[in-house]
Length: 470
Ligand code: FAD
Image (tube, rainbow, N blue to C red; front, side):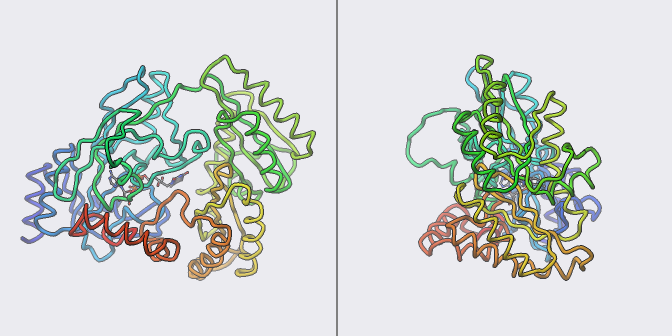
């Protein structure tokens, strides 16, 4: 069957308005926000229900079409963008955007996969509940994409990764069958936990169309502080101190370097530098409690007092209002975008054991400065999880393309150091296309074979996201 005939066939399933074929209609689905990955496709399908997704998959399977599922298109490893040769169709989940059910008393929620993370936050808040997954991209990313990438974010420290927040899934399989696994049970040991196979599978095993999620009490009180420090070593001591007092109430611990803070304050309209002097490093700390009975204000004060006494801090600001807390978070969330204004950035999403973060940073910063003289390291991120976004901005005035051509060489330097700490080369963004060729270097042959067997069992014709991950 030729493509126009298939266009008609897809139109008869989901309606002509939802089969996009013109260049202008397809354009937003073919490039990601950094312009790093650009693709081509004969069509973008926008089904409006699980049944429509299943029918589209059946038709695609009959004609041996390759299918790239796409959520909010905020992924950072290229998995959601079709190949540039136009050999794959894009299936967007964005029209599946409903809250199906909220059970505030049972602390669960069932949603369509294409709903944005922000809309989930808003819906939970209306019931005085919290869905803790928090990412700078939450206005655009969708829960199906979050689940497919096992997204991390800034609240992992207390609530875990997306994997820890999912109770059940609904998935369209490669043969078009719908797996209805939308249970809301906290305990269920009936054989293999199949949902875990799809969480973090990056669209290679099936199309997630619905999810049941865990909710938590909305925080009754939150304290947000921004502190300035000499070094990541002092940040580690502060982390240990804060954790010993706050335990699981330490919900955020984000490290930021002076370079990144400067980029944000220079380039992001709403951000203003909050201290009087410049400092080498900063940490944003969030402490929150689900009940009013816990006095987290005095808990935070104790942490501050002890940290100053132990000479860990150069300066510190405690947010005096929700607006000021939001200002502090804006500084952290602006870091990725602000870097764009300084030219090319070579990126790494790595993790090492938490206690090794200072040593890792010292070694990696020295190594990349030697590899690319004049480059500007901007390592930041979820220090409490040992997850650092080790980004390196080009030297001032350098040619962007020439700098980005060094991407693989610089990656090799950084990943080599990560390996020496038994770390991970992808802490939270996944593998996609960007890191596919590195996977075999960091997984054993046994692990690669198990992954290939799972792929072959669930997607024997390699229909979903071919060439991503494996
Ligand atoms: P997409 O980008 O559309 O897709 C991502 C992958 O999932 C692709 O492989 C795609 O094929 C697959 N996929 C999407 N939807 C489905 C589905 N329904 N079924 C099956 N497969 C599907 N990530 C973090 O983990 N932590 C962060 O702190 C973080 N911060 C970010 C900040 C910014 C500014 C940006 C731009 C990105 C950030 N990310 C972060 C990365 C990104 O937001 C996450 O990976 C997010 O989970 C992707 O969701 P999405 O809906 O945009 O998915």
